[in-house]
Image (cartoon, rainbow, N blue to C red):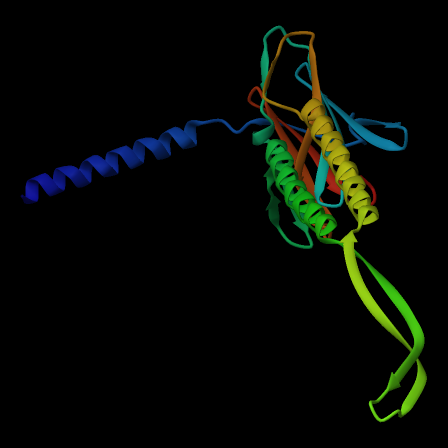
Length: 250
């Protein structure tokens, strides 16, 4: 029993040693840093700043913009090599360095669309219910008056006048409220269709970029409104294209 245990332990140690050796032998990726004082250029288009970094025949163009919920990264990759290269957005890495060190998560655009669809469906259901339940109240007042005569068997006679009012309240569907609810639902659906269409057509998906070809699209990350600086890393074909981010001076 001891010999089996010893053999098992030796096997585990051997495997761990081999893995460590393989990890140590694996070369670190060649890093291209976007330093505008050392060859990394930029260009403004309609007020938006794009940084342009070229290394080993691959040109990466990046622009960042904050939305209310996400950090939007517009990316373009041009392959100037003789072989196809894979561009995999989920492997992009956005690291915040100040005021604290943390990784900002990649956001799947398809999940954003599905989440928006669920919110709109719930909002539309509540809006339609409210419109259908809205009632318009109306009040009707009736006025009455007249003269009364009365006599008894002993010949006594009396007369007089009277007047009075009665009020009746009724309710009916509030068609104006229903129309407003329908319009709110229409506008909400239109906004959802616009968002879904925009993300579906502009989001950057996994692509194998052929020589002399370009792929471009949008990648989303979680937004930290307190972030002051960080870096965006884009791995392509065993190379790493790194873009420092400095708030207000991207």
